[in-house]
Length: 396
Image (cartoon, rainbow, N blue to C red):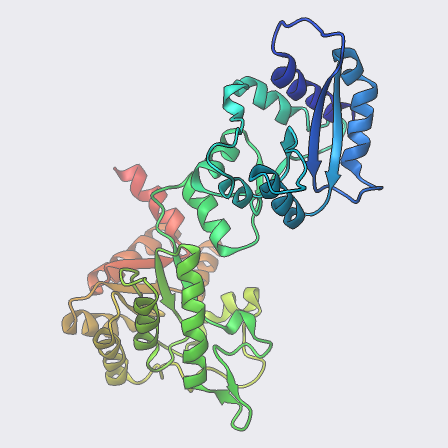
């Protein structure tokens, strides 16, 4: 609590007394509207009372709380005061609100830019005062208050953690730290259903209803797009999924958002390790009704070519290792970029064989990557990615 009081003192002294100014006879009163607690029980009010009785008294500064309410009421009251509505209260010296309130205020309203009064070091002092040496404390910025790339970069510069609760907030935070990162989002429902299948079930047949799944997939794609995804990759392999998503994205202003199709995805046993970890194994049946039979080469080729006709920007073969013949066939039949997905079972086999001393792990891993490339892959998605990058970096 003392640390917070000291922070209040720093802020108040810097803003309202200035560095090196003499104390005045009458205390400076600073009015405040905030949202932290009810009128009678407010942790912030308790801190303000302590500040007023200690450091505030020493510095002739008094913080006076005029209103403790919610963000909606503060929004209405601040705007009423700013526009001079009849009966409205005088604007306080400080108030707590979301950015929308400030943006809605009249242009001639006098608002203070903190950077006109604080140096970077003074701001850091306020942040550092929130840490407690006796306890393992952490300062966390709630991104719901206000988030843009510049805000996320400011948070990062001050070594503050950030609380994110949506895909859009996560996207902004990542882009602020890694602006050139290309974010691809997987679109599927197996993680969100209690049965583990990739779409909505038909109650009569207890199998995936392709058309109903397409409808909700379009909605999910728009959620991804509005959150800021750089590319969407629908992995459920529903018939007509590319046409459905392309139409939905185009009609809602996302004509340039690319789609990577899981165009040839086999109902394979190689997914086992991932499904165990993600707990996404179907609770009954399997996914053979909407994923490819590993034995069917010709249909595997046609599935990718059909997705190309529907508007896919990138094609894919998943898994990769046991299907290099299909990769080559699709490469010969299409000029679109071709991705292979080196899945968890393929990765686990090499890892465990290496641990057991049965193979030269790094050598076999690199030969596998070369095989994907030689078969015609332009893009390789792999659990080996970090290790491969480290080896390539050493070589060059």
